[in-house]
Length: 338
Image (cartoon, rainbow, N blue to C red; front, side, top):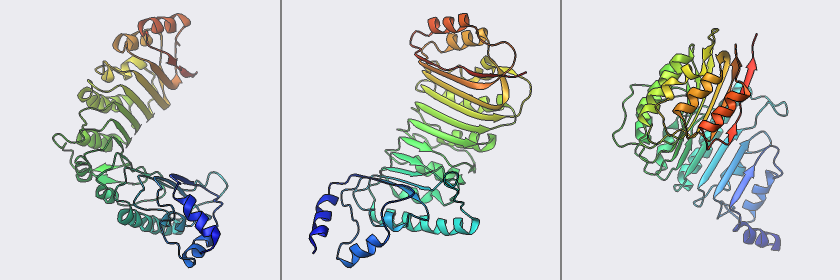
């Protein structure tokens, strides 16, 4: 064996993390050369983390040749056409779905000990049920999956180590929680409209959730916060971080304190981020005082919205700081509307 290949094998054993992005400096002919020289996959026998961005310049062989038994974390995405001008045409997307299926099949057969799985591109669609084969999963991001049903979510509830979950954009089926399910789930991120989100939240229903992130599309924000409030009430003893981003089409401004009222049951809340587009909200000194009265343990507060009417004063912000002694991170991004 040539000395260069012997040196490659020796150093390859020390590689733990590999990030392949567009454009890759690895020439695809390299793998044919290595195979012809007697070196077979996995090329990096100690690899634990692989981040792979698929592009015309990054052949899937780059991933297939390094996936192995030592892999614990895998992230897969498509090169974003917004940067560099490349566009994934519909016929190419279908081809890429088949490529992804090949990569996932390799993952199933070679990396049964996988703990973190992140499929984060909305262009690709696939059946998320394959993830149930990885019983050691701690973090599962299925943002790329267009849809799942509640039977799949109930199956996820039995994974003993699942800590973080990103739910697909649409959830269908009958909401029915699993008793004692999702026992260790601490972080949950959900997307969707009212029916899908209610279905997902009522099915998952985690007992000890600490971080909740929601991206919602609702006609009326009052409906949005009622949906969030129902889960928040169930997790009121543990929930500490809440991020809500929603699209609202209401034209009448509502008070921030009124919109957030369904969340006041979460007495231990420490961090709150609310982003509303394009519907307006109204934030005054009285609203800040209401937030402080219900959430005295706040450490971080970030409301971002279009604002109508009266805005908070310096005195109101100072009162907020006094009422929340742990508050150290505040950003009031209120774009004044006419």
